[in-house]
Length: 460
Image: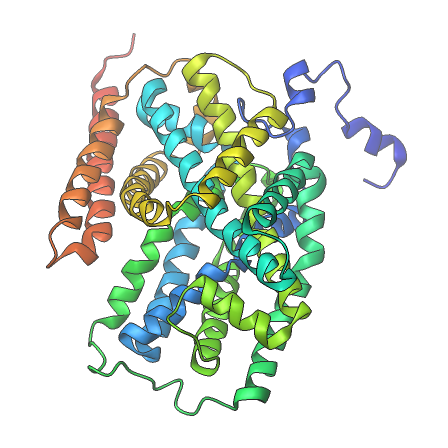
């Protein structure tokens, strides 16, 4: 608006905002109201923190080693398209409804089922925070030469938890917006320095494993990336802060294909190139970051901390708000964000120091089946209801039953089938697509049956 008066008229008065809304800037227990929405550039910068995990570099390099570079890149491009389409649909719904994953799951599965979904989301975000935080702690300990891993991990946790207390709207967007160019320039500089020291890796694009390239390596790569479908849940909890008028922009850009070109393709190319140039013993996040530290010195330390701090703002933030939602529903206790964040930090610190990473990887694999099934049910529900369903769903929260039989059956059956397939070595790699297909099909049939029953009820 052009006048000061008109700008003032748009601001909600203290009388029009409930006490809960004034203190809960994350809106973890209610749909995000109009005054809680963010300008599109701010939300985009807050969300794009997720693009800078070293994990994406390692996955791409591992796929190139296993199936050949061409197969890996084809699988990544298909992944970019798939993620862009699904998250475009999810983000539109989240913006219209303003719901969190926890609140939306209450509609899908009922009050009790939502508790399970919220717990899985919290645990997954926490595990990722542990992995990325451990990398930061290790590189800090190695660089200093004096700090123990325990002290370095404590610094990582304190900094990471401290960064999330400003909320998405008032701090994380600015923090991550400033660091995004540093991440991009730093990655390009790392590739340039590696090329200068080790030379251009001839034949990196046509690289194949010693046993030869699998004709379906691209499919295996695509399926492997389904293990990170928790990003659909991440999308939901961030997109709810978008404004209605920016819905198309966010669906197409912020949460769409451009974001995943940066997240998967750019990071993947960097990871594949660095793996082809820097000599390492094995391949992992740790091997790559230690290679960068040796190559770039203090510049490598800064690059690792910039990239991992960005992604861990999302991990710690989502773990904290979902822990709040979980405890609120389970115990009826509304825990302050600073307390919930402190608990998340303590749990992350304990897991970093414990020799539990093998167990965490297995837990993530099992939880990934739950997440893929959740996405199938959620997408079928959104697609199966009319465009105004997201608005009506705001009014359905208090009326949601303890158990929503249709949603729980679709989620449970799909998850059970997925876990069964994971234990069958011959087709274990394709358990995720089958899980998604079963969940989507069952929820679609349930939605059509519910709509048919509603139409058959005579109106008086």
